[in-house]
Amino acid sequence: MPKRYFERLQTIDYLIRIKGTGKPAQLAKRLRISERTLYEFLKLMKDLGAPIEYDRYKESYYYGEKGGFNIKFTKLLAGLTAAAT
Image 1: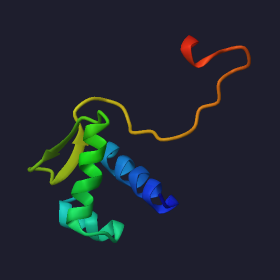
Image 2: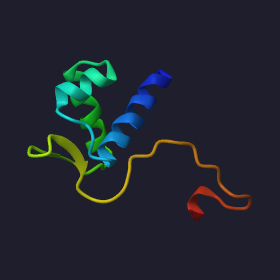
Image 3: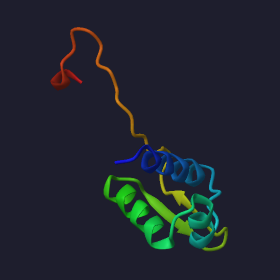
């Protein structure tokens, strides 16, 4: 999976958190992807638990709960196992 894929996820997450996505067509154009691909990203994020909603009045996606979508490797501290965390 190309690095650009994760960069787009991070950009979508950031714009959702600040409620600055605009309409789906605008967001897709900004990301240089098709609307269909945008909807695939949003579906993936929702499937992974992101409470994404759309405000028709403000014309922006937003999270229904405070938080953010985060994809990264987290290093365990010495002496801890995955089962302990």
